[in-house]
Image 1 (cartoon, helix red, strand yellow):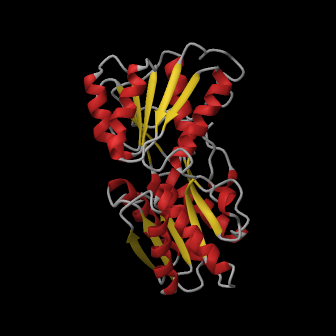
Image 2: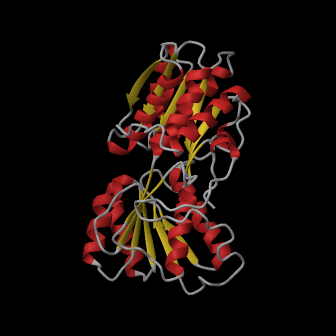
Length: 337
């Protein structure tokens, strides 16, 4: 199931207007061999399968699918953009029933491979591909980012918080815009400083950016920088070990699991794993929706806070819940740029 991560509650099963994504796949195919004749693969972007972010989450989704259905799964890692098309082609030529391309930077490669192989089925995360044999999955990252902005705005002691993005573009701008709006909604006196490092795979760039922001008095940094964001955590850990109190807000996964609660204030969880499971399960059931794009939202439980937030007070969590309800009910429209 796409579990509502905000405040640890569960959303109602629902369908989005943009692709009709059923939000409930809990126990779908669990313990069965419904997928034993299916081969489903994925190609990572440059961050690799152990990026502690969305590539890793996507692979975990396929691993769960394997347990639930018996499907054969495989991943290929890309070291850079030049690997995208060859890796996708390798999966397609090997007869995989579905090939995932993870990350918006793979749009061109997926489009090319899909066009050249019209009988193949592909799926995309974070990239809307216009092709009849590709199903695209997008997320309302701005909505989840608004909620962690609420946490940051109510937690900061300096009224200065930072945002570190990877490659500047429409996708990461959704993270930025939502975060800035969330901070402003609860703390109009707080200033958000935005920096982009220009890469998703360079922790040293993330560390340097974080050092600049922390030195300038920002006590909380929200990153949406993939592997580069790992460097933000490294910088925070160095400072906390010396007695300085700074925080990082993680992204995509509950990054406190990897980096610890001493530096992770909370995370903006994006359920890439469950999205991969939903679409792959539909393929196995004969319901692949090529040529469509679905957008998974806060209402679907696809974005939000982790279930456990030990560093966020009950009062702040109550305010998060309040804004979550307003967003889901349409009382607030979160900006996406």
